Length: 449
Image (cartoon, rainbow, N blue to C red; front, side):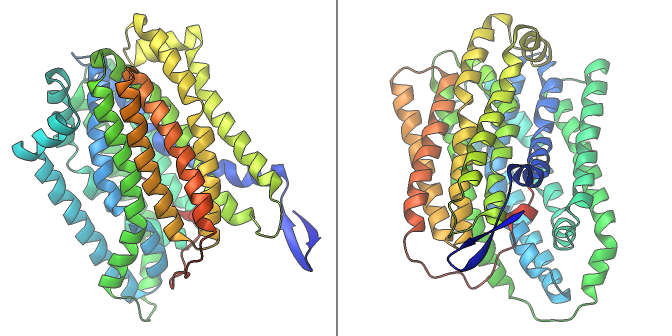
């Protein structure tokens, strides 16, 4: 770190090495969190329906992820309120209520009437995809309860700045998923059912490990007396952080609907989801730029290095997955592991090239979101996310009507969604807004399931 003089203030700026050393652990955490899906997809792809199982599992995860975004604000709320016994107990009640709501909605979506609306009317799945997608969605019923069972332990460890300890449990889940995917694949336990089993067992391990690691620290908080916000106040606070995530998650649902209605969905959907499954971890890593801006940004400095680092990070995140379109690697990963037919490799290459730009624009959007958080402009973030949804839907609609292939609709929509969201965010930051009364913790300490 070095100090520079600016407007009679000492402003700390950071070198590229300092930015990299801060960002890299966050990126690795984001990448490893998303790494379990390709591992589970390997088990699914070896079932009777092959690559169609990969698409079905992805479709089920889209709906499940959309449901889980209702709980997206719980970690932030927990970090704010779990500082004494009263806050801890009220957060546990809040966590249980949100979990019960998600489980109820999940069961509701499994019933005949709602399942037809979601999977047939909205997502437009044909019969080949409908049955395995519905099966995967039903089998994933324990996931919301299991993921939320980690929340209290996670926020306690985060507040203690023991993120490495919390991540060790998550890393254990990833390693166990890797081992089980290999065992299941070589023992013939393959297909949708065993893919879900392969994913569930490591999550149970993570829940047990996380709570065991946090137990002494939870007991310490229970000894602290003090006042806390009411459960209704916690609920409103949580929903303010969840609402924007719901809009972003809904965009994936819309893309899936357009892609499923485009030509040759039985070919293009497996191609799109296999390619996106590899890109997603790196795109998620690009969102950690927000935490970097919160830590190193300064409103009175040019922040040139920070912006250059943002663009470079996005480009690196987009280029790394292109290694897998090289002749040898593409055959091994996509054809042998993901069971994509060799004749579809040309579509894989096409999808991967389009997706190269996605992490770049996600990084730039996260850069602006970081400044919105820095200036305490939550309404700007919500406005940007709303525009993001609108731009994704509009882009997908025009691409579909222009005859774009299903594997192209997604990348094009996501690129334009991020571009327009960034523009609106930048404009909204300049609008005067009353700061929130509750201070939020730095996003660098917040992890996703």
